[in-house]
Amino acid sequence: MLFAAALSSCEKAIDLKLKDTTAQYVVEGVLTNEAGGCKVLLSKTKNFTDNNDFNGISGATVTIADGSTTYPFTATSTGIYQNSTLTGTPGHTYQLSVSIDGKSFTSSCTMLPAVPLDSIYLVKDELQNNKDGTPRKYVTVRYQDPIATKNYYRFVQYVNGRKEETIMLEDDEFTNGQEVNNNLRFSNDNDNPARDIRPGNQVTIEMMSIDQAVYKYFYSLSNSANGDGNNAAPANPLTNIKGGALGYFSVHTVERKTLIAP
Image (cartoon, one colour):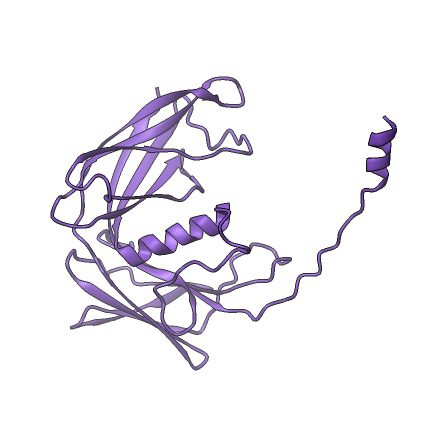
């Protein structure tokens, strides 16, 4: 008890003096094969002590070109630029251009052919429980990986419309040309019931066929967020944006399936 009291008496509040950094532009561009799926977000980074609100930037000129036509974007709100008619076509390459305050940011991305999402189903993990003691459930996605191409995938899960925050990625390094049953696991460390899959929940999975550069962006973003133990300090994700901005430009197809959890 005396030892414990001595330890508690040595506790000290530490005030970390973190230096402010020069704000950088962040470009997040998405073009899909679905109508209305074209959007570019432009913002600036914040200091560690700032809030997490979206720091949107207005006044930019934003376009996407496909080699023959240039499509202008309109600001629909601060920092959000959209073109409601542009729909991506598999096999086409698209060039993103963002101009703001004398700076220019560009990127190029090719839309790869869609890989069909055959089905989704739930599996129980008897070794992990929800907060109420029931077995945790995860979605498994089933699809046939094409043998002729190198493929990269990103999966986004929604439970009753709530987007799961875990970054879910897959490539075909060990599954090329095979039928894949990929279990989309996530770590609900804070035991948030809204993230768990429970009976009656509507679960939607989006499967995106992305290119290697976008895969590397989200892979490095995931490692930075979770910490892989190999880096002395978190690093910025690998970007495919040229000109000094952070972020990514992803041109991809979307496959979508929904189920009701039993």
